[in-house]
Image 1 (cartoon, rainbow, N blue to C red):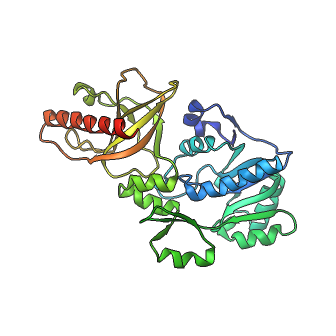
Image 2 (image 1 turned 180 degrees about the vertical axis):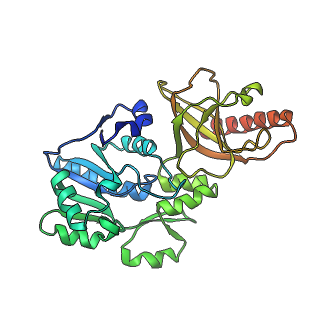
Image 3 (image 1 turned 90 degrees about the vertical axis):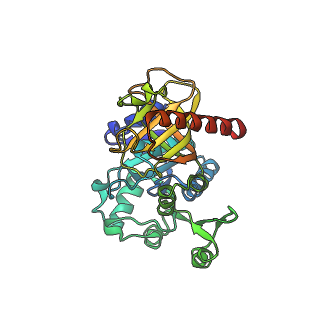
Length: 339
């Protein structure tokens, strides 16, 4: 996979974990199948769009290019995936190119200029794939109907219908946009980044995994903490909070991938305020089982697998220590049974 990004430092965490090339610019002489979208979370709806593009790419022997923004201006703490996390997931999908555009370089373009300057001239698109609700151009004046109008007779636009999930039966269903409202009234939900964010905030991590098609992940560089957990006998890898949505304050069973290590390690992660110790700020720290090496400044990727218990204040450090031992015991038993 090759990543095109104006400033390669924006993806430094991903670069440490990846063998992909990160380039500051690229001229596309060959035709590409172009996939358009924001792809926050890279959920099952996104997978459907991307997989259909990949199938066509194999059939036509053409490369598949994701065109998205490096950063979409939104309110603080509203992302499911940071840039590096998104690239980490993309890399597992066997894509050829990820083109990360700077939002403010193109946000003033009219729909016509976006199609001509970006899709045709810059990306050399042979076919386009996008979701049913894709919008583009200045003030989002362009939609999939406008995109088809502007490219009619030039480039085929493949618009992927909504992907729905039945909360009672776990059934996935793709429906015509005209049928969407009927299904939403029958225990189905639209798989969308907005709906998944609500599930994350309410700690419904089993549903989050089903709708994402992969675990919710946290990626970051290990930093120095206060080392209080180490004094209790549970050294932790600490991560700084980022511009993303974090789940309910709780203890989670996790699997951790460490830069430079071939295997993954199970452990427990606490997300919250550490109410027994200081009750200030947001703490994200992982106790990695059977591991006690210096990994400061290394990048780790943590898969959140299960919610063990909600965070709560203990009466003493001794009670906290006993509870952590119980958390470890519970999670190790689940690992043995399920993983």
